[in-house]
Length: 185
Image (cartoon, rainbow, N blue to C red; front, side, top):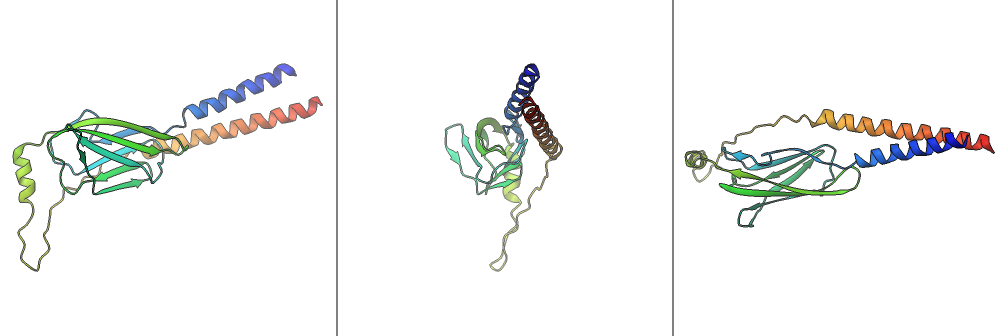
C-alpha cells in the first residue's frame, strides 16, 4: 500500500511538472519572418503565437541606428499581435522586440530581425498610387491587402485539449490517492 501511494505521488508530480513546462506561450511565426529580406513594401508586422495573448502586449521596431519606428496602431487578436505603420517601412535592417503575457500569466519577451530591400522602382510606384485630388475630394490610396494564412488555430485547440486532458488525469490520480489514504485509516 505504501509503494502504491508513493507511485501515485511520483506520477502526480510528473504530470504537474510536464504541464507547467509546456504552458508558456511562444512565437509560432511572423510576417516578415526572422532573418527575411523583404522586397515588397510593407506597412504591417504580424506575430503569431501558440496560445491566446493578453491585450496589453507591446511591440517595438528599431532600425539599424537604434531609432524607434513608431507604429500607428498595435492590435491584439487572440493569438496575433499586429503593428500597423502609417507609411511603408523604409529600406534597412530592423529589429522587432515584443513582450506579451501568455495564457498562463507568464511574461514572455523576445526579438528578431529582418531586412527591407525594396527596389527603387517600387518605392516610386507606391508614391504614384496616391490619386490627385481636388479641393472637395478625399485622397484615395490603393492598398495591397494580403491575408496571411493562419495555421495556428488548430495548434491552439490541440494545446488546449492537451492541457484539459492533463488536468483531468491529475484530478483522477488525486481522487484515487485520497480514496487509498482513507482506506488505510
